[in-house]
Length: 236
Length: 347
Image (cartoon, rainbow over all chains, first blue to last red):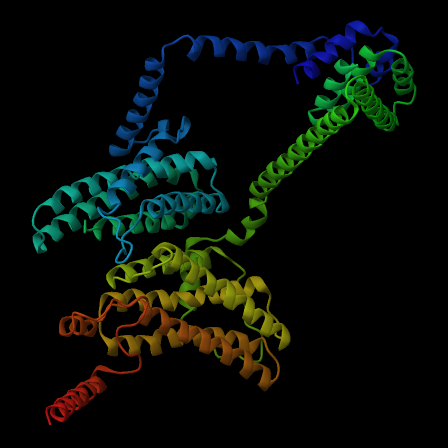
């Protein structure tokens, strides 16, 4: 490939004018700016590459990424009108949340005989499949949001539900009973509402104003299914 | 002779065959100059020349390989040349396949625009269509309008999936192979797509005026009744209530679809066939969904009575068609039968 890229230059020096005299007369005028256009992007990319990540230590890189993820978590917990979550999206946060939730929803024993509970793979697939479906739906409704931005927002907005799952597991350590269930129900409902509110705060602006309800409905359904899984979870 | 062969192969599998050709010409000398001149003169047909050039180069390569083979052990290195060619061919094929797949994925994403018209709805429209799906219109002489829209049906199917998941959870349904989610999605989408295509096929046979899109929309909105009935009866375990809803809500949404189909079909036999099939399938599907994934109070009583009963899988724990009122005599009959058996055994 490198040779192929260099070959135009080689050809220019090696072959004398008569070869391309005709071509240049026909298609390209003798103005210089075209050359300038071509060289500038390469140089700028190189500079950026040098200055940003190559020279710093691995620890710095990881800390920077973790800080970015943490900042986005804060945005979800305290949703404001901000575009940080949309502008520089990443899928690390969603991955972490998804894996955490799926691990917590996994039952203690692998008893295939009597196992109606969600398995790791099931939770994982539901989360990603649901997010992709919602994203496609919002694209079809005419939203001006990119595919991964939407995935990022939906993934990060699982955070309240993951917290709810954590609380539920703690509550389940206490003895079971109606009080126990009521506490869990309350926590899950609050966190469910939180998730919906956070995701709509980020996603609603990308939709045409008259269609917000249509785009929000599948989001509601998605988080409802997840909350339902969390509420009905019982460790063996 | 080995050096010119390598870039030519790379260029052929890689980006631009023209550049590979040029390079070849510069390095190779001789005949290449003639080709370049050719290209300069006939700028229009230069690609054909390039193709010819490639052909020749390939032949040269083969010759080179053959020559190399002759220098050393004949049989062995003939194999080697063949292997080189083969690997190049495989790489070429892999590249082609990868490119095709990538372009297909890209075109799929670009094709979203094709689907967009079917999702062009307002919330108010969806609301009114949902309501209309429960209101049969008695207008037979003139074909009734069906909105060709997929947002509502798709969302209703997903809602049904969620409700089914809910019902499976509360009924502790046990599925041995497969997941709850997969089963729910499979059931709902399978019903929607399968029955739509089946009825579309029947409609084609019966000469009804309906398109596949309209059929999908019609059946999709027909699922609204199912969603309501199932959502209520999964939470309130009353048999009488379910049968009431089944007849009333399920019946209304079925009637609506039947009315639309009747208005679009000509001839009594065709109408009967088409509408009978659709009505039967639609109503039975609701029955199936209810009884397959429903937790019933009687089920708990059964398990309390006999703890040794093996767990059933996806089997209704009650008998469909037996109303609570009718159940009482049945249990009494059972009790008398048991007593009879006991007395017979004791004798």
